Length: 426
Image (cartoon, rainbow, N blue to C red):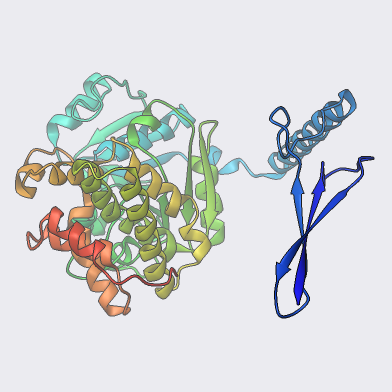
């Protein structure tokens, strides 16, 4: 028995039409009766297959009105929020101390000093020459020779003088040197002084984060602690370009107070209670940035870069959530935001290390030529130890650690990563 194949020609199936529908029937060999209807378009070369209706003046006016109302609603919410927000923290703050004279510590010192002319901002610095440059020339000649610092930024090598009477302490010492540095100044630290950590990374031998290092080094488990993180280059902060960061603390009131202290017209500060998520994302993104730099240095293309960073983001999420972090933190400012900045922008020190490795330079030569610390180099080994502790597979970040240990070349790492089993995405 023959079936019937029916082809129906419709001029425009998306919108109502007065045109009649025509049918054509063709014999279709089959053992059973078949009725199959295929709708096809009679398409002319002058008319697209899917065409939006002509935008009438009324439709354009309605759309613009909807957008305007949405924006006005957002502004009303913003004004209402600001009217309820407290602003007394900055008014009550008289002195802030910044530990460390690197680029980011200097940028945050300048930012705070600009917030209030009467605020005394002390920088505790090891290098007497940098200290002299700040006090006499009002600039950090080592990192920002062309930027003038506010006159209320004062540098000192005296820990007791710097910490005396401080309301807040910003810790900007590299992670690997933090424990010994803090033990050396512990006798001068007030037990109630809030520490705002700017340092990102993991201590190599102990796997500790700054939220663990600071209270243990100061011998005070109750030392108030806040982690500051997010996509932020020191140079752009110095140039007062729009920036957004997050402060994380288990003490909600302290997080809110830190937000008030730091937020300005060019620096947005969000708050979080997920200290683990903010810190682990800030540490691991440095390792991923080295991998991204290697891809760039080897000229492997944009497809490779996108695939590698996506895989690295997943690995960071796997470990962070196993450690108790919230997935939303990993997709926020301190996670995805910081990862994008560090992996894709040339100002990143860790990415620069990767680019030079991918271009064939030796790690020792790269590090000896750098004036600033690339935390990802020392953090890589600690990350893998954490991954083993929490039973998480991290192929990309493990490959970086192997390269840092001179046990794997970048080219060999790429070949081995590409030959891993094809698995379901998780």
